[in-house]
Amino acid sequence: MKVTKAEFVISAVGPAQYPEDALPEIALAGRSNVGKSSLINRMISRKNLARTSATPGKTQQLNYYRVNEDLYLVDFPGYGYAKVSKSQRAAFGEMVEKYLLSRDELKLVLLVVDMRHPPTKDDVSMYEWLQHYDRPVCVVATKADKIPKTRRQKHVKIVKETLGFQPHHSFVMFSSELGLGKEELWEIIESHIGY
Ligand code: GDP
Image (cartoon, rainbow, N blue to C red):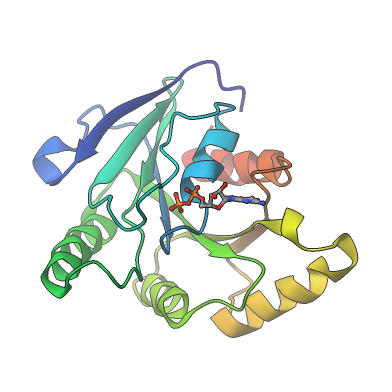
């Protein structure tokens, strides 16, 4: 996809604020600091539209970014950040859950994981949850540039094994630093929105 326009639209704190123009939505889930903002910025070729997190876990809204007049990238609150209180966590957990289960516009969930390490318990739970409810998923293993080329496939294998990756889902190795995986990920997104 050629991105000619990308803009931040809203930090939605609830369904009343979700856009009503029926554009397809691609959600990004992942633990805090995994690199979701950097991924968004790389995908839309902007340095700083998505805020890279100075305070991980602070974002508790769904951040909507419109790309051209084609789709929204919807950044979820990062999960697994200890300093968020239990009630806060429950509140945005509920919001995310409701969105994932009932948002008609949702076409694909990008589950972003850090390729350097095996996925965390939270990553595995998220993936299992998405699988259970049969949501369309693409696992994006990011920060590939931090691993020497010769060892990347080994890391991919560990990520897949730890998640219990299902071959009918998509998988992309990504680097926001290098732009690795960008075209491949756009192709996957396009195929899910009938572009
Ligand atoms: P978020 O909390 O998921 O939005 O994470 P950010 O996008 O703010 O990234 C967290 C940190 O990881 C920042 O310091 C980024 O510069 C760094 N980072 C994110 N993606 C990559 C990547 O692909 N490669 C490298 N080397 N660093 C990355």
